[in-house]
Figure 1 (tube, helix red, strand yellow):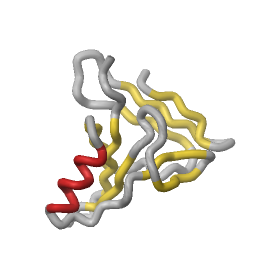
Figure 2: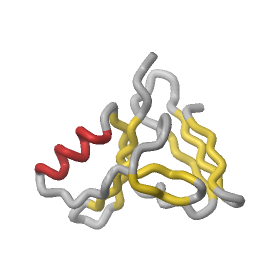
Figure 3: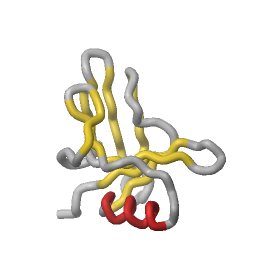
Figure 4: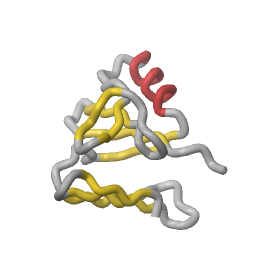
Length: 100
């Protein structure tokens, strides 16, 4: 398990990466904004900069804290950017911690 986070009084986020996989499974309850398609990257700032340079409307880097999203980075697994593609799909890009 990569993350098990209580989100306020009624929510929970659990994230898992199957052994040997580059993909992650994201489960959540409650009303969090983490939804849609999600990618995990080594450097969320670099990903955001590249998307912005290509003309993509992408959010600032944000973190989840005290039950809400706030601008700026958080701890491990807690730095995100959000965007929508031309088809209207919601995307979340999340930074993973550096490998030990």
